[in-house]
Length: 403
Image (tube, rainbow, N blue to C red):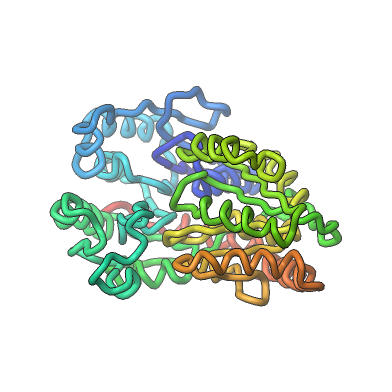
């Protein structure tokens, strides 16, 4: 089977790109022909990677491409589909050229399925971390947020006014056109169905056991690890504050930040200004093939996301490598970070809880071992690659064309 994975960016930004690369490898092992098509400025690193240029330079073009139609993008994508003639198209992030991509697929009549990787189709404000907190005279964000809102109650006025005309229209078009969807978490599946999405299949991400060393006998060195995009909405500043405060109780505590993002420069500046270099290390972007070294040199992995993380792929990587995990009680994180069983949860609206959770794992005898053992068992039971691929291939064979 010839399978085309489409993602709107070729740059390796996070879990969606990691999943695409892993899925490509598994499809090849099963004897299929996978291709990855995305947009970017760099050259493809492999022969089955198709890198198209971006067609949305400038604010007007960006808005037009995202919410309406971009003729150049449509023509380029359609041309590739006609040349490649895939048996099925698996959409991933399709935010930048949504209508252009769907029109090209519809014209070529290729069966299609889409994995939903985040909550942006339901709640665009998940990327507004400064709006996460309550405002005076209003209900809490959780009470106020409808997650499937047309009112945009937690959005700025400009976004609120445009929400029904752009964002809602886009979501309704996707619901109407795409024949089937994949949700990696049960909570996301629930919210998608509540929003009117039809034919939603729950297929959690998988872990390739051959790529991970199950280091359950690691020596406790009080090393805390953050892996991912270095952005405000990922809770990185909460984590830094917790580590700084914990030094009074655990003088040899260390924090390793593995990842790149818009806040990396600001964080590096803050570290230098406060002379924190001896206990906070920033590694920048770490290639996926080397990320296991970070896991094996740490004792605690923290996933402190402030917004609705739909799954948090790095979490099951941490579980698989035998590292104790702490996650925010938001989105799909609690599905793999089961509080007091496979990890510890903290309320992202009460960041002071994070300090106590880290302290418990580092100082409470036997806790880390108990969590890591349960975590490894959960990975083997739920996030095993064969059951993932079996379910996915069944969908590939039975999916339909765009209506």
